[in-house]
Amino acid sequence: MIPTRRHLEFAAGYLELGMLVEAMEELEAIHADDRLSAPVMRLRADLYLQARQWDLLLAVSQELTRQHPDDERGWIHSAYALRELDRVVEAKAILLEAEPRHGPVSGLLHYNLACYHCLLGEIPEAKTRLAIACRLSAGWRKAALDDPDLRAMWNEIAAMP
Image (cartoon, rainbow, N blue to C red; front, side):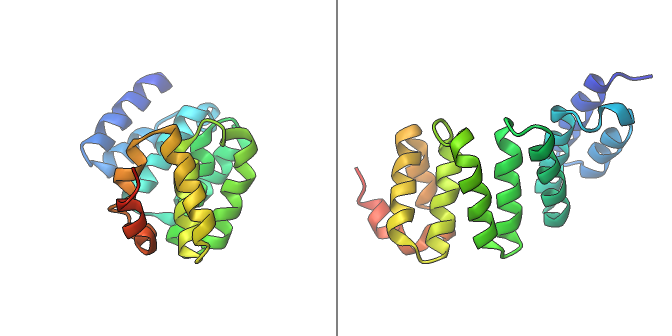
């Protein structure tokens, strides 16, 4: 029997190469007792994200959040799947729920909240969230200049120091 760790390594390698079917086969070969572990669920979420299978991403991310609430990726992926399903209000709510636990250190959480607020026309709050994300990591400003979710703010973002 191949250990879960090896299946995860193989699946991650396949995923990196864009070999989604093979990655899924490795994940399916993992013993049932290990399928709800955080590393397995994270990799499954990454697979669904790459495959753009939003309903499946949402399901596994919600389960990751239930089983491992301290794992930020469950929250982030759940919200992103909802955004891709045009359920932006729900996506925002998920991240607001995660904020007390992950907000102090997660630039990605604030960046995504900036996107969701902007999409909802809540520009002042979007600016605040983007400023927090940029304070946590300067790279978010560059990402924001290319993000269509933040299009309404591109001129202001370009003028940011």
